[in-house]
Amino acid sequence: MIKSAWIVFRKELLDALRDRRTLFMVLLSSVAIGPLVLVLISTLVAGIEARAEARVVVVHGIEHAPTLRNYLERQTYTLRAAPPDYEQQLKDSKLADPVLVIAPDFEAVLARGEAPVVELVSSASNQRADRGAGALRRLLQGFNQEQATLRLALRGVAPAVLEALQVERRDLADPAMRAAQMATFVPFFVLMAVLYGALNAALDTTAGERERGSLEPLLMTPAPRAALVLGKWGAVASVGMLIAVLSCLSFLPGQWLLQSETLQAMFRFGPREAVLFVLLLLPLAGALSAVLMAIAIRCRSFKEAQANATVVVLGVSLLPLVALLNQEGSAPWHLWVPALAQVTLMDRVLKGQALAATDVALSVAVCALVAALAIGLVARTLRSAALK
Image (tube, rainbow, N blue to C red; front, side):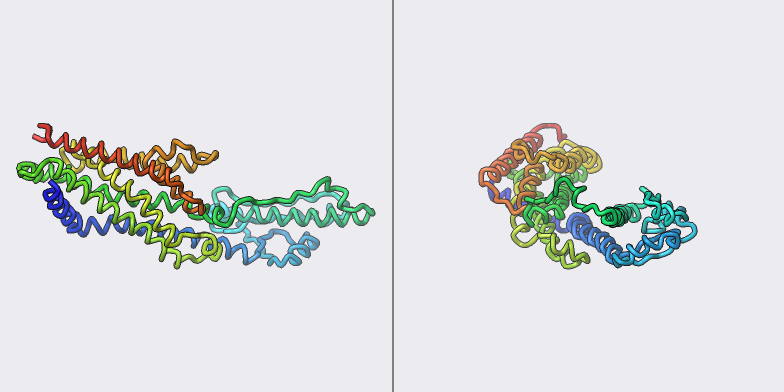
């Protein structure tokens, strides 16, 4: 039986690798998409950092507020006049900065000891301008604090009397845990890469052969059904494992393309993380391959198998959201659910935490059980008359 399974394994693996167009699309969509998203995020963050370093304030009516102008210039900000149609440009997302609108009576109201009103104009639909509104609001709060301090000093009142307590923040997160927040999307992408890597091979070796009429001659050979199923499953699992390895390794050179110095300093995904990711994903690749084959073997066409496999794709893609939306941390039952267990363990790897041998063994055992049940279902289906 082992010899027959090896022959089927080689045949199915060569068939999967021979379809170069499909293999290229799988590699492009599964392996390249992660680093591509990483580069896009880096470009976005680099743009935000560039605008922050430019220290530009777009103002309408700054000639009415020389005191405010003096404060902004002392904070090393450059003032730029707002365009006449700044409201329309903000709505159309053509203006990337919020606009500070100053009333003509700003200095007169300030001289009376009152609080002049300034407008901070932005648009929630303009994300670039909306992000800059927070920084500009904090800058104006600094102006308020400076004016309040000067007014108290003129009246002989120490500004410290207004502060009943001093708040000092202490962050318990180490650099590894803070860096893990920047790489939270990596487990999701490598997980989906494994799924899509095994998907096409699993459907083609079952429903595809059934549709082409090449499955019946294979069943007429003297090879045991178990050998046929193990050979096919081994080929599909090998393709999924290959995609897992390539997907994890693709993030290593992808970091060279980061344009943001902040991301370069915080994004930590080295060879250690890549190796651990691969080891955690290999059992899942085998389980997903078996489940996809069990679903596709009951379908009469490749198209029907694709429709039925959508349930697996949707389930695997939604499971990582459980760990993301759970604010109370990982629960023990997460390790009993395939895909969710791998995401939980990969998150621990990114945070620099040690992986307990019992947790890893539990996730491997669950994947092995799922794979065994699915393989048994495929073998049982091949023995039945449902294929006729």
